[in-house]
Image 1 (cartoon, rainbow, N blue to C red):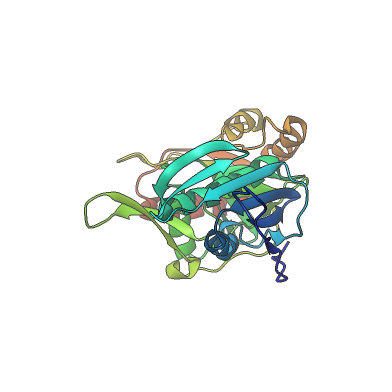
Image 2 (spheres, rainbow, N blue to C red):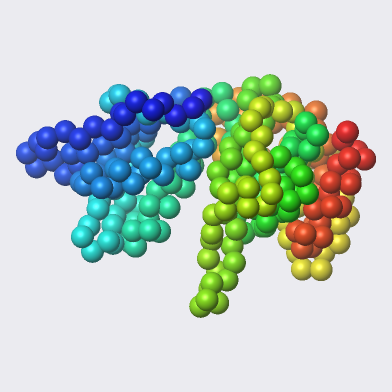
Length: 288
């Protein structure tokens, strides 16, 4: 589903005592979201960022009834506030960080409530027509490993979500790769990079899963792959699955299909640069 170019932003004349006269409506995987603000500048920035937040999988829609609403309060101090469904998320927070947080919250809302899709926290690449899916939450090094696989010729699919359809095929979610590193103050900072930075290209079609790799970085760890049964693998995958509470029946059906058809492998790993080659060699030998 591609972005629709027609404008769907609506700036109405402020109604008396209305706090949020400016609004934007979007739809992604049948999830409809309303975003509103007290300033048109906020809506302008949000609309500009949407293609990065929901790459290739959203459209702007006319005003409609929604179950999900974000309210962004733009302050002159550049310390803004964010509410979801009228509940406080953060108040008077630095604008740059809060806008990024809004993007993450919108993605998570789509991931949780998407219709006929199952979102899993994972890095995903394609190697010779089959997906390598690496489930993991934040700070496990999945983006670093994804980037290293891309450097070696894998097609980039995602560093945040694996998106499965009812047939167990995984679709691309090619947001920019988010890598953490130390800044000049020796503090860890997340920076986004286009996949071209790593000499890579983005996959465009849904593909079958060849391997689900359960791994995380550990200092001095050695690559010792252990193949799990489909039942054990299913239990492990569920840990990183987003919509398991919202639509458990559909989610279990899809994951059961994935765990039955794909090789599920578990192993710790060391540095991403050293591990990537070993992973591709194993994948070539066992999945192709």
